[in-house]
Length: 242
Ligand SMILES: C[S@@+](CC[C@H](N)C(=O)[O-])C[C@H]1O[C@@H](n2cnc3c(N)ncnc32)[C@H](O)[C@@H]1O
Image (cartoon, rainbow, N blue to C red; front, side, top):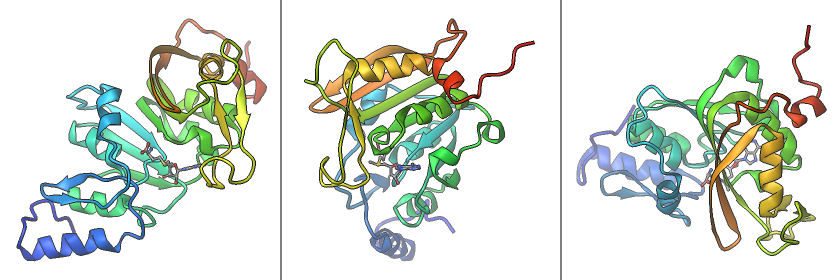
């Protein structure tokens, strides 16, 4: 059931509010239907603006890795994209399920660890969003290798990073236990050069960057000139040559 046309005061409106209130925790603060704003702690509208996604995404195949409550998935779907979202949490463990029901939009939601993605069955995507996930991963290169096999055009990576760590040298800082923001799901924060180098070795070209505080956004594209992806060889996934 969807509540796409819910208006304040209607029976559907009360159900919609109830659905929002039942979500155990909202990360994204956003308006799903006019007047219905989720009680998240993070308003991601500024990030959406920074991405500079096309206003018309009709027919675009988009992948949102780690969508959380689905703010970015929703906006891409509204612009006409076919959106697949992959997260290791169930869609009702965060707000994605409520967003889907309330918005009336449809998504392909896959509950899985990104390390379990099988690129040969998922196929390729025109746009991949990889926002706020890299630093949660124990093996950054493994993730970028998988993404390089799923992305045919454009990749957006947004991450915690180390702005002041040995500028000019590609390094990443490892965060033991809960030492990054008290969160045990955090592992690594690369510096700018490290993220750029990892992306190049995964077969991407960095086209645009933006940073604020300890966050870095990279707008990258598949580097069609690069014949050998170093990272792909390392994981033994290089296609055999005749
Ligand atoms: C900080 S939130 C980022 C949410 C959203 N992309 C954004 O930028 O606002 C990280 C998300 O990635 C998911 N996640 C973290 N590690 C994952 C993994 N290994 N596989 C799949 N999802 C993962 C979390 O469940 C969460 O939804």
